[in-house]
Image 1: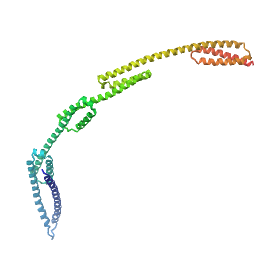
Image 2 (image 1 turned 90 degrees about the vertical axis):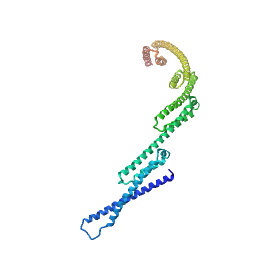
Image 3 (image 1 turned 90 degrees about the horizontal axis):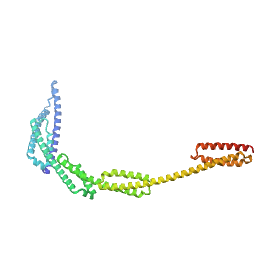
Image 4 (image 1 turned 60 degrees about the vertical axis):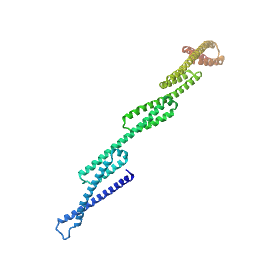
Amino acid sequence: MTENTIKSIKNYLKTVEEEQKQIESREKMLSSELEGNEKPKAVLEEPPKTEPKPEVPQKDVVLEKKKEPVVEIDFAHDLLGKTDRVLRKYSAAYIAQNIENSQLMLEFLEKTSTLLSYNTEFELRGRIEKNIENFKNLVETVYKTQIKAINKKVLEEYLYDLDKALRRYSKLQIEKDPKRAQYDYNILLERKNNLPMGNPTYEMVVSKRFEEFEKRIHLVTNEIKAKKECEVIDLHIRNFLKRAEREDFDTLYKEYKMLIEEYRLLEDKLDKAEVASVKNNLFRCKERLERIKDSSQKETRKKHVVEEQKKKEEYLGIRTFWKEYINDLKLFLEGLNTATSAQYFNLYEKYSSMLEVFYNLVRNDMISKDESHQATQVLEYIEGQLESLRKGI
């Protein structure tokens, strides 16, 4: 169908629409004239008048009623002839080569059929509608066949590109150029999401092969991530071994537990060689930690022994000093019994000094409560004797 033919069809559609509007307007005029004629009939029932009956409108109405069905019948027969000619001309092969023009012709016939008058003969209308329905089914069948063929071609092209990617991107090739492989994978994924539906066989094949390509990409990508994480844990282990001699055991033990946790999270992602390497380094860390622990324990025991020895010496010193203090206190009490009032100030000063020494000694846990109580009683007695000497001054 040429462009001129298409233009003529469009022009014809416009003409048909205009004719339909004219028919509708004539029907409105006809109905208004009929209403106008009913009034004179009502007047005729009244007593006759001298005025003549309006004959002209009645003749016009009769003429319109006779002319209108003839036009409508001719229009219906013309449309029937068009549909017959279309069915003879538009075979399946012709429609396949001119699908757009065929759809346009179908639209033309369907719109034209809507212009048929309501009083068109039933049999004539049925033949027209049947021809249009047959033509519509034929166009839709050819269109669906073409769409199916186009979709199949799209799936075949995608499947070809997918197979090409599978042949190109082996595991080794993906490791060499992971960015390019990921880029091509993303392109294929985007195309896959836009593939046409309705062909289960191709869809199943595409799904399986795409899953294989996706598995390769993810496998290599996870391995690359695992290697980077393995390098990180190796760096942490080297730093641990460097600082092992300078840090205390508790700090190093916390860091060692963190290294173990890192390895457990990474273990399933590493290959056998990498697992063996990390385990070996962690074993070195453990050995160094054990040596530091032994050294720390020896140092702790040594410090403990020194502290115990120091406490023992301190205890012995205090006990010796306490015994000397008690002896001095007894001697002071014996001298106080024979002292005079003139000696009060010297004795009181010596008493104050001995009282201060007592308070310093009893603060220590090495002096028992009984010993402290006995000394307190002696000091209270001495204070009473000094008070008697003071009164005698």
